[in-house]
Image 1 (cartoon, rainbow, N blue to C red):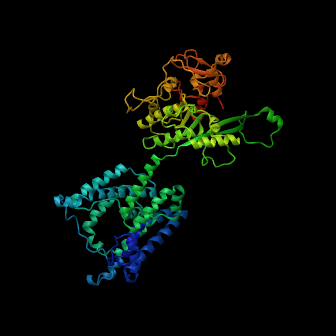
Image 2: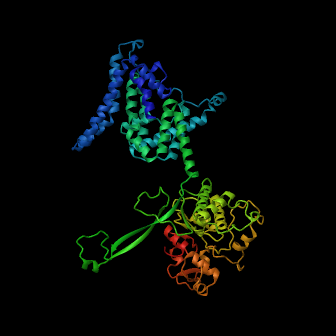
Image 3: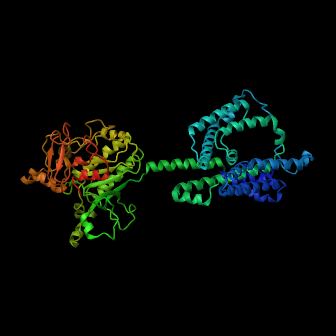
Length: 639
């Protein structure tokens, strides 16, 4: 925008602004400026000399102010630098008066400001007619948007330049009051002005008190100095404006910085600049605002969720607490006195190819049957379906189904699981004949999903649709795994997120027979089509006997106790072997030293790790402080 303003002032600087429209598109103004260079008038002597004076004085006085040792010299340089704009206008006005005072108006060879009306000649109530409203009605919304956007953009630009912060609400109130009062004086609609604001900034204005001083000076000047304003050269004003907006033009280093920070946003910036140059500033603003909003919505709707793996960090420390730096002069007897101890810390990073680029760092995948997922944005209705689909696809790719339909007739299969095709069966037979591993054998080596750990460190908001989709995801994963799948939530940022998850039935550690909660039911209760065998196995009421085969992975709540392992009970033993868990014993809330007096809390303790030791609260045993704690609780032991 600064370049467009500067380009529009060049014709006035050189004296041929009346030969073409200086408010046209910037590229037309630039082309016409070169086209009419031969028509340059004596105005260029005033404009170019004023521009040279402003830049030279600024360069010299800035160096003097920066390098001077005497505080008196620095103060004089500062005030001279502040007054350079006024000095330039005063001298060029005096020269213009000396040059034109004996000439007739028709023979003036430079363009001057001309007659300025004295005082307030048109004060009063505004005359608003129906015809005026009908002519302006269609343009009012666009004008208002441009007015507000321009004002806020200018205020923020000068805030960055002069290192202060603006309040947008205060700016909108100020511009509204100014335009309301301005109607009593038949004033033009007021908004922020790059040129006028830049002039004040270059003049050294530091506080809003300058507005009151400017208002008083303007009122006095309207009554007393209009005669002197008559002789101000237009070229001098153009020089001042070009000098003022020059610093607002982005330098190549700034543009390259935009590209390094955000290539997409830099492309939006380039598009806005091109449209502003070849069309108009309004279209450039429309494009930049619209593209930024579209990019923001795209980021919300298409976030980057990542599956995590573990990197174990080891750090050696002296027991004396002197640090872990190696000491070449350390004697063996000193090593024996204060031996080094090794501490480890688990860090969870993206397991994908673009996660960790260092080839010397090995990212370990999560334990078999456990998925660790980090949400890249807040979980909202535009992106929750994408998150759930991503988790479900990953689970189907890296785990196997707990339901075996290989021996089931085609008519008894679910409609969305037709089984292997004829060509797939032929390929499997060919692989068997060749002695190669068949797809069924590769699938059998995959674990069954038993737990999902969510890293909520990037989630600042959670809505109703998101909770319902998480409930549906839990139901889908449990049907796929044919067992209870525990959901663990780590690094929750807000108690409102915890409350929403609890309302959805998460985090409570309920037993496996509980049905998933329906937040916003659209199908009447009792009309769901659930296979009877699946209903009997996995959603039977408490106390209903059920038998699981060894292929079915158990949940943590049904792990085998030492007595089960010793007695060789098939179901419990198979479940414990599938989990790879040590023997456990159930301790009621009253008998546990950590949970004494807390009714209804069951604590599972093992010989290696207590599940409850790593969680945030005993009331919500699926909420954890960090991802490492969540994975440990999901596995049930250190790994």
